[in-house]
Image (tube, rainbow, N blue to C red; front, side):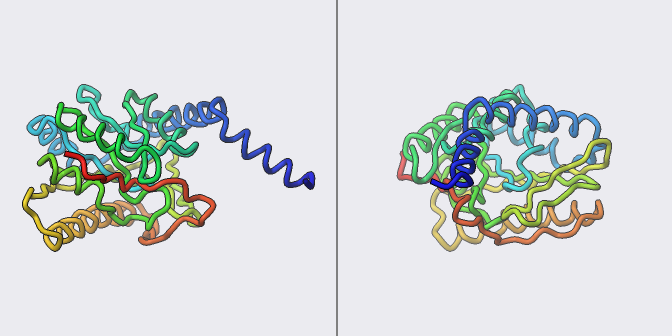
Length: 257
């Protein structure tokens, strides 16, 4: 094997090691905390979200992949929340970040541990623990709502609430499929949540699709409006990851009763 390929293979293996993933997640955690504390936030909808959470006992929390880093910062820690993460090394890094914020994580995807993960998520909702799902997954299409969150909402009667944020002066990674936003310190930011969406137990496919579209549209509108207000360019919807980045799908929706 050529030296270049051996070095590339070694680097890939090194970056995927548990020790390195823990270091990366620790760096992201402390940076997210610093951003949260040094940013002057304009908060929209958080009080209403927490009131719904208090009333319902649990709910399904969603956010786009490119805006995931800061979402745990706004989590009300008096209420438990369990996040669905991939078993792949990318997912383990995200799990490390969430766990440092105090969240619990459930490992699974449509291709790995899907039934067990779905059962754990369903149990969480029924015993009064919220669940968090990134519904555009790590492969996209970006800012496009998959059906997994709606599945759990219909089965349990719990609402879906989405959240997003933007920070003035952020760098948007245009070449990444999710247009990830990297916020600076000491800036101005906006955090916003959608209304609570419920899925009737007897809803048919066309009604479910209409609700799915409404959730997706509202969460995207809040994201684009926040970006525009803070002087950032609009991020595109519908981008997909290149094949080498595809590791899992958050469409964890087996027939669990």
